[in-house]
Length: 131
Image 1 (cartoon, helix red, strand yellow):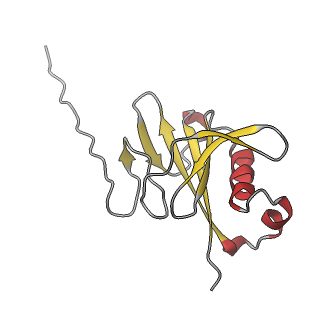
Image 2 (cartoon, rainbow, N blue to C red):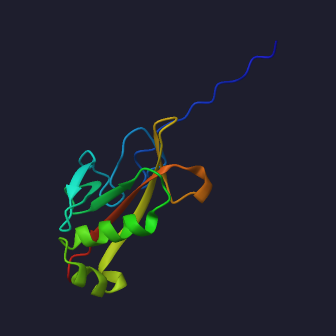
Image 3 (cartoon, rainbow, N blue to C red):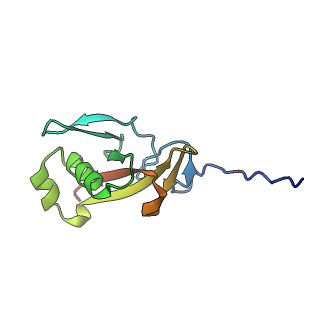
């Protein structure tokens, strides 16, 4: 019988990227953001998301297939639910990042990945400070 080598996966929490990690880290400050919770919107519904101490907000899309909606909700949340200000904001006035979550192995991964991988997505948005 042939023995299979076990492959070690290390969390790369330092070095500026999420890599493969068991802990969700803010892509902007590398801090640990709050646990996802139901955040009420001005229209009476809720989105699953949270915020980080650095000012970033995020929305969690469990299906990984609603990134447009998740981005819109995160952007508007970053502008304190002011839809007009959020949609009128110049593109360079905020930062955005996507982190995937693979629930089968419990890992957070950098980047958007493939549409077919069915990983949940955390969509982070942070407003830039005026200079």
